[in-house]
Length: 294
Image (cartoon, rainbow, N blue to C red; front, side, top):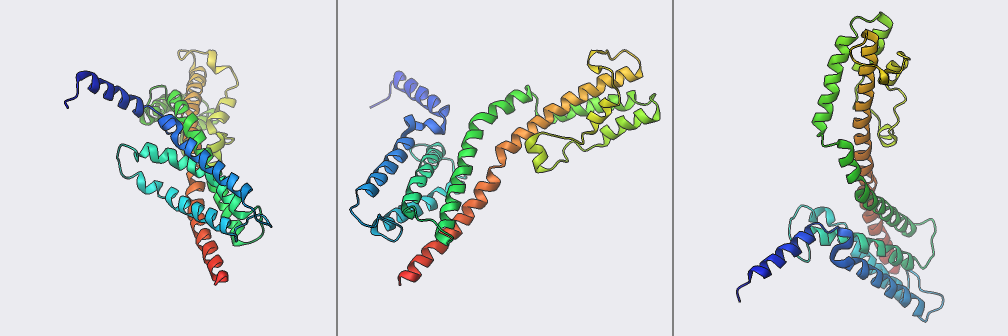
């Protein structure tokens, strides 16, 4: 049966809506409901099991929970491989990411019930702790990916990274020329600001956005008048003050961009290594269980 123009229009509208749908609310939060339902079912199962003492990792229910958790963790760790394949439909990247988030959250319940709330200084607790670290870093990643991209876009003010750098370079060329008539001490302040590498900063500095050794800030302090109210057509010092103010504003924009990008990316430096460590700890956990079982 041939499709009508209305059918094609409805399909395009549905696909357009799907393209702009966040993975967090994918298909009316299908995977959130599945994850919540799985967690609730396993929690009720734990409460209803008629066993004394209560089920732990060494009980039949504990082995069931452990098997489910292990399978989920291995599957969830495949998201990085899945990202390299672009497909649509039920297992599109958006669907997989939505399942990754909500099934990952369900591991809080599954993994904790598997321990039977018996934690100690052993490889089993290490695996549980690493799992919680992976989940916590994942939650942080979801939060920043939901909030920071809009802030990055607003901070750019329709400028690309290259344009922001070029705007700073243009101000620096003007500053270098404007500082030539100054006396040696003040010229040195400007020269120190121009020579400082804008992008050379430690991870903590970028994350906090605080630059206590900013040479531009020190140069501004060497020109104590209110440079923001002065015009570029005043005397040499006044022109330098105005240019230093413009440089500080441009630096602030670039540093905000660097900070937002650092906040957006830093979780991966925890999430990925912690996931690898978790897989190793799980292998040791499973090996030790079967070794002592045998």
